[in-house]
Image (cartoon, rainbow, N blue to C red):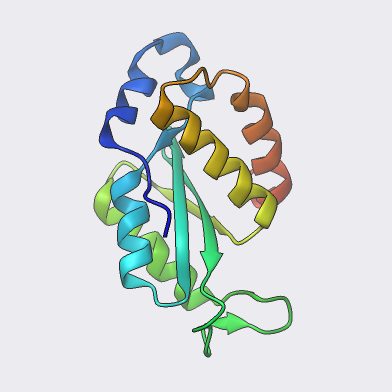
Length: 141
């Protein structure tokens, strides 16, 4: 299981107040709790901005059981609600939690989190993540 990002990333949001709405914080604690508490999730990344959290979740293909909607291998509403409660319990400023198992979003979140952890420049990711979020979560427009 990939270890999610360290807690120092919260400083990213505070570095430049003017671009704060274009920055995404990596919420390691929430991601770790999701993996620990939700059996069908093998790995997760949680990106937050303002009062929104975007969860990129990887399914545990060995234990999917009845927690998947088998028409499209997506998560059931019960699992999404459980993930939402976990994220909000870690950060009470979060009002909206969006969950996706889209592999492209998972890869992008993984790359972003890796660059944050290595201290590499992440500015190029903002537009890409924003575009991906609009595509994966059209209800958030």
